[in-house]
Image (cartoon, rainbow, N blue to C red; front, side, top):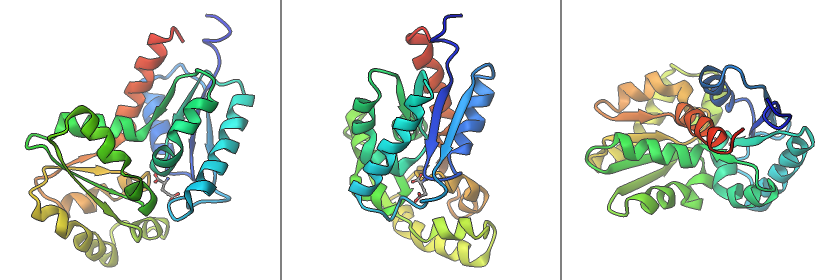
Length: 227
Ligand code: DGL
């Protein structure tokens, strides 16, 4: 093992939601050391301006680079959507993986009718990052995106199986289901916690949770880089 191979992987999110990615990484790469940065002091990011998110993300990356990480995993859709490119520049050539690239890839593999929907924060939806990532690989795919800002506070409140959450999800999904989607990307770190409820409201629709695909992409990137 070289000194470089022994270094930790830096994983970060606006809060604790990215721990779903950490769990997947621990299962896929059990011998790796991880440093997790969850910005619980300043969460949520999904309602902040692009400039603020970029500035906060740059601070987190600076911290993780100072910990001498060998790779970075952006475990936050909002950060990946607005600051992914800047973070790749700041990372000085280290592998940088993110939930949007992995989620888009997984959605393309999952969908059979090429009708994919994405639910995410306002910032992620406004950035159009998911549609760009999906269309870069298959321009003929129908991509419907829906901002679902009420779901983050409902999850934070712990209302994972609550009538209010069920009605909110139903309302948000209505316009998506009309378009005959067969795949729904949970484009926010909080939403995997709502999987059982969303699954009931979107029957016959495959739910994509990018944690596992991000872990797989990380394993491949490390292997390719000899890390
Ligand atoms: N982590 C954010 C995301 O995945 C959701 C929470 C927030 O708004 O900060 O988009």
